[in-house]
Amino acid sequence: MHLSPNEHNNFSLSRFESMLKTNDVYFFDSEEFEEIIQHYLENGKVALAKKATRMGLEQHPSSTNLKLFQVEMHIFENELDKAEEILDELYVLEKSNEEIYIQKANVYSRRDEHKKAISLLEKALEITADEADVLSLMGMEYLFMEDFEHAKYYFMKCLEQDEQDYSALYNIIYCFDYLQEHEAAIDYLNDFLNKNPYCEVAWHQVGKQYYTLEEYEKALAAFDFAVISDDRFIGAYLEKGKVLEKLKQYERAIESYSITLGLDEPTSFALLRIGKCYEKLENYELALQFYNKCVEEDALLDKGWIAITDFYFKKKNYQKALYYIEKAINIDTENVLYWKRYAKINKRLSLFEEAEHGFRRTIELGNYEMETWLSRCDILIELGEYDAGINNLLQAAEFYPENAEIEYRLAGLYYKLLEDNKAEFHLKNALNLDDEFAMIIEELFPKVYNKKRVQELIKDHKKPSL
Image (cartoon, rainbow, N blue to C red):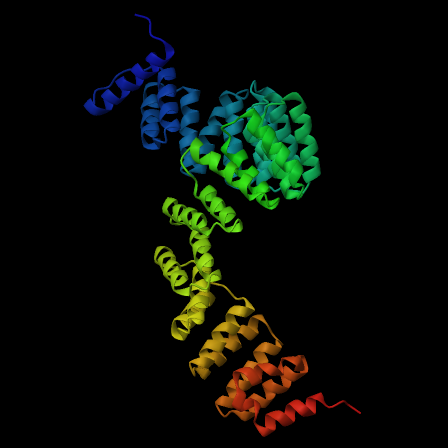
């Protein structure tokens, strides 16, 4: 009975797995082992691929291809010396086998010796029948070296070999983007489209370049062509929606985003953007509906929770805003954007201890904006925590030295603690930096501001020098 190639592969695989279960030993030719190993690698079953490689070499110890699979396993497990040892042995026997050069280049690449890797790939290129694969590997090595001009050149060579190689096309555009050569990218893509007028990927990339250049009408036209080329291209509809938002055409943007919901599982991005569009159109009920759908779809998307929180904050419904930001914090306690909002909302609700906790967490998570330090300080003043307020400001001063707003607050706090010498030092610093901000003392420390000595210092500073 004659078996088709697929049936033969399945038969070999079934026999191999049956052998593993029974501990019997079956004979397979080397090509069968290669197909079995390839199957396991493609399906991410590395342990079974290793077992098949070992058993294959036991039956066919001189098989170069099986030894190359063994090299691949060693490289995968970062056993580079072992891989190199086998490759050196194979090189002595088969100097014209391009795969030996490619795997040796892979070893050098793993060691960050990219120039050596490229040198070997150049040799592989001279003898290979599949130039596109080697050109792609060379492009990747240049990418690792951040040599984007050479990387771009080799990926372009790949695309010349195979115009369907979209990974090469994406890498070419990545290089153009990194080099900020957006007009050059458009010219290259237009040349490509002259030969491939219905390539949706190229139209999509043209649109993204125009979007970056803020040429929104041209971007819109490109995304329309992408959709004409493939009316199920979700990425093009999403990008088109973004452009329409920039053009303030919110109804059309909603329409474009909505198409994606029917093509595949709804994406949290599309649901969020639809909500934003409805909010711009002042259809607040539908905006909230889509924000809620967004967080139901992806509870880890912080932009969804922030959209709902900010919606209620703008409406001055601080209790609702607090409810949603607390839900968000329960999901992700390390999100600095959540804590910043938590602090501001509690401040509006005059819940100062909670607000202080929020600003403190914001700082602990790495938000060192001036506003955060000052807001926390003002709340500590409200709570009468003067020592903590000073410590907070001294930390802030490390990031913002010679800052009048910090110095005025330090002066006020030291006066509160009856440390007049330190207070005067900081008040004089503050006045020298910007006497217009003296109102900070008046607003935060009215009793301090009315002190005779403070008034004298302010007036003396404002006297014109003779």
